Each structure stands twice: as structure tokens, then as C-alpha cells.
Length: 308
Ligand code: 13P
Ligand code: SF4
Image (cartoon, rainbow, N blue to C red; front, side):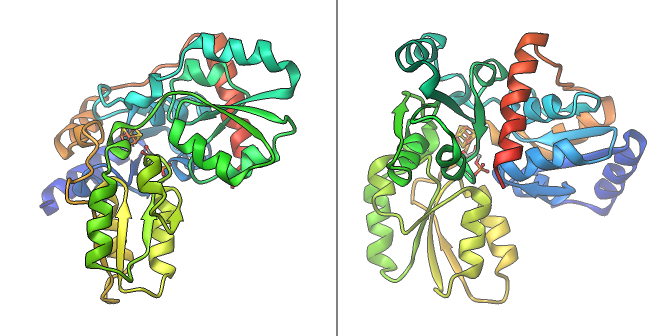
């Protein structure tokens, strides 16, 4: 529970630093409450690139804060806990990219899920998020697309863009991969009329049960626009707060798998750490070496141009 004193202190600290707090839907609800903007990865990257403030406090995992710094290098970017890191961001090897480039030459594009390190982005031609991956891959001029690091989002893209040869890499999100199809089937048995809204990082068995696939924002939009009363939601349960806020008074209900999908890295972003970083200016995110920064920024900028 946030006290008025705490809210006032956060407002004062933000004013002192000319800071804006950006939060992802997966961080704890009370951190989302303190944020100026809450969104999916794409919305937050766009905001990071355009907000006029001097400081960004990124309540999310390190690839998000790093992307914000790359897109807005003149800003100070702070992370409440720099140890909050997405494991999938590291799940691709340089040799995989080099081998695909050797095999397909100019007819290959490397599409890199934004859940990746700056180094991985710098090996790639374009970044994507779950909200725009299908549109961007479809728009690429090359016939062959190596999709890194996420095998599951890559498979979903391949299923939607059948005209391309989408080559998959073996990365995955442990939390979405572990969403059990049996638990989804149990929910469907209990709520037979409930649409299943899934994040495309889910594994193939759970995805096969989905009625809709999209980013966190797109899942929320689908639930807000839908006419059903019950929804089965297959993503990290941090989205629950925003789902309930945006559908308040409608009687809509949201059902998550029995094994709570929680992201331990997003859970590192606590109110205490947020306030500490605003107070002390700790957790500052630096730029990677120039050649990495340049390549990663080019891939991110291309996403902002092609994505929506
Ligand atoms: P979104 O881009 O859908 O917000 O997802 C980010 C993420 O980390 C999913 O696990
Ligand atoms: Fe990474 Fe998965 Fe956590 Fe998203 S939910 S930040 S993909 S570990």
C-alpha cells in the first residue's frame, strides 16, 4: 500500500532529477502505480526515444533500460535494480548468425527480438517486439529471416508469414515456456466460453489452445474490446492490475494458469529500490562500446520506422 508521504517523496525526487518513470506491465503493481507511463516493450521504447525529460527511470529488465539509453543517449537512464535481467536476452550465439549469413548471403535478414543484449542487436538488421514482429518480418525484402533469440515468438511469426523462410534459434522465456497446456485445458474446461489470450512467447502446446496472440498491451486491448465475461490469460500475471483497471465495472474476470506465471527478474523492481535509485541516482545504465552501440541503435531505429 502506497502512502501519501511516499507518493509525495517520489514526486519531489522526480522533480529534482527531471525524471520520468517508465514501467513494464510485469513489474509489481505498486511500482506500476508510481510510474508515469506503463506499457509494453514497444510503447516504452518509443516513449524513451521521444520524452523530453533529462532522466528516465526504467522499471523493467536490463534490455529495456539499455534500449532506452541507446535511443536517447543524452538522457540519464536509471534502473532500480541493474541485476534484473531477462535470461532470454543472452540465448543466441554469434556463430548462429554468422552461419546463416554465410548460407543465405544478401537474401537473409536477421530479425532480433528486443529481448536481447545490445551486442545481439548489433549483429542484427532489425529489432522487433511481440507487438510488431509479424508486420516487420513480412515487410522485410529478404526471403530468409533468421529470428533470434526466441524460438517461440519466431515460430508464431513463421506461422503468420508463410511466404518467408523463417529460421529459428533455440532461445526461450522460461516463464512462458513453462505455462502448462494441461493447466490451460483445465481452465478451458472450467470456463468453456472464455477466449484464451496468449503471449507468443508461450510454447507450442499452449499456443495451440490460444484464440488470440499478442504483446502485453495487445492482450489488454483484446480483453477490453472483447464481449466475453471470462478470459484465460497466458502471460506473466503482472498484467492483471491493468486488465482489472481498464475493465473496472464491466464484470469481466481474468483467469491465469494455476502455477502463477511470475517473472523473478521483473519482481526485483520493488518500490524500495525505485525510491533508492531516484534518491541516490544509482543503477545508471551506460552505453556499450561505440561499434556495438551503433549497430544496436540502427536495428532499434529501423524497428521504430517499420513498427507501429
Ligand atoms: P511485451 O513486449 O509484450 O510487453 O513483452 C515483453 C516481455 O518481456 C515478454 O515476456
Ligand atoms: Fe524475459 Fe520472460 Fe521475464 Fe519477459 S517474462 S522479461 S521474456 S524472463
